Amino acid sequence: MLEIIDPQLILAVCIAITAAALTSYVGFGGALIMVPLFTMLFGPVNAIAITTLCSVLSLSPVVLKAVRDVEWSQALPLSTGIIVSNMVGVIFLTLADPSFVVFGIGLFVLVSGCILMSGFSYQGPRNRTTSIVLGVICGSVMGGFGVPSGPILVVYFLAAPITAAAQRANILFPIWVMCLVTASSLGILGEIKHEILLLSCLILPFSLFGAWLGSNIFKKAPVSWFKTLANWLLIVIGASLLVNQIFLTK
Image 1 (tube, helix red, strand yellow):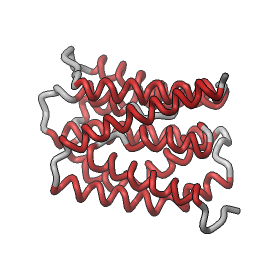
Image 2 (cartoon, helix red, strand yellow; image 1 turned 180 degrees about the vertical axis):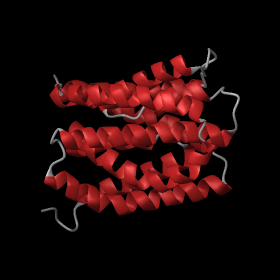
Image 3 (cartoon, helix red, strand yellow; image 1 turned 60 degrees about the vertical axis):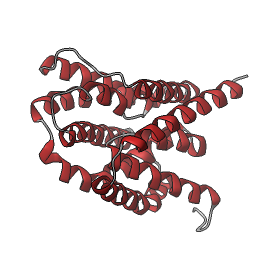
């Protein structure tokens, strides 16, 4: 049983609040912070289980409000690709060497921060085929390494001829789907242990608070300056995880 007052739990709560607020505010990025930091605390599979369980429940109210802005012509084929590849990826996740998974998490987070900082955006065709391919890529990354592929979605939707609200919704909904499928798959495979479920229940109220906080900030403050801060944070966290993993393997 977890101690009521525990420094590790307090740190996990602070991470959860920040991550949920970031996702609710910007539309992505929270789990990219939560997964690597929780990996340092609890190990990769446990970190992914806690993150996805908390993310699904804390983001559900936000997604319900944003769903009216989703462009379903792209979101449905995108989600189909996500679901299929995500389930396959989770099987790989549970069988892979944890050190390889940790390295993959750090590398993806670092590269994501660099790409987002560059402002690169997708300028190619946007149709059902590209949406399915995008979904397969996102689902594979999420399933295999447990990090929602928000940056890939940002690159794809950043230059789309749609409103800012639709861009945010088109990013937020697939991330929620990825977390839902990953959490469900881990549960079916028996990877969510009793103590991890208990820890998730303790962290969840704070994730809900963070999501509420981020949603209210989104209504009142621009996200441009915060995106820059979040991108730098991803770069630092990704680099730290890679360096830490390299030194551990020596």
